[in-house]
Image 1 (cartoon, rainbow, N blue to C red):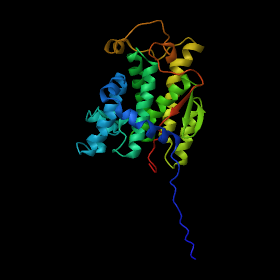
Image 2 (image 1 turned 30 degrees about the vertical axis):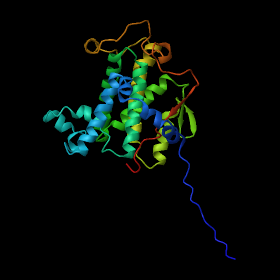
Image 3 (image 1 turned 135 degrees about the horizontal axis):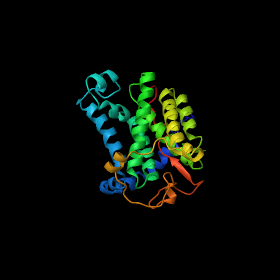
Image 4 (image 1 turned 180 degrees about the horizontal axis):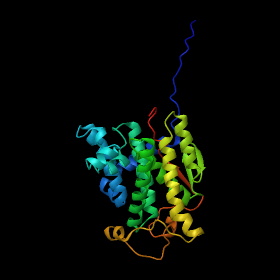
Length: 274
């Protein structure tokens, strides 16, 4: 009598965020593209189209990466001013990690747009100021792109304004007040560089301090949105809401009740080894 032992390989359990995404995938696919697109704000649409367009354009050979990354000599002396924008949104060629990175950037842009409902000019000015600060960081640290730093800056500002919100990374839940640091440590564990994370945190906190802290503590407003930006991007509706009121206090806001868990669907979104 011969006994044969058969070993069955069981794949590792999927992270909670991936499992939730796969479970909801049929419903997402059933939703029409038009309805999904209509649900996005104007700034979120711009970020999504720009990010995807840059990556696909590079993949198709329409341009080489050196033509869209930071190059201050080319920007100043050859007037390649598009680099001021493309360096903020270029995430590299399409790949599986690229999808996560795009999702991260779009998700936190959308959350910022929900917080700025009806105040597109203020949101555009936020991007302008963050972009300017990130370019200073790129100059000092010789960074070729700042897309990861922009994502972290947007995340930092949102988390500071919603410190009691609950965010989850895989199976673990964290308060928004500490979540950016958790994500930074996660990137470090994966072996990636955290330089852009730190630059994004510094720039994001500088904006938050000037926009939210100083007006409350000293009655000083340093970075109010200029009039010409308001004329270019007029408010969609007027109302008696404070500049940084929580989304739940405004019509159409998507901010859940304090303490209600929010799932951070995309993990770190950083390519391993990059």
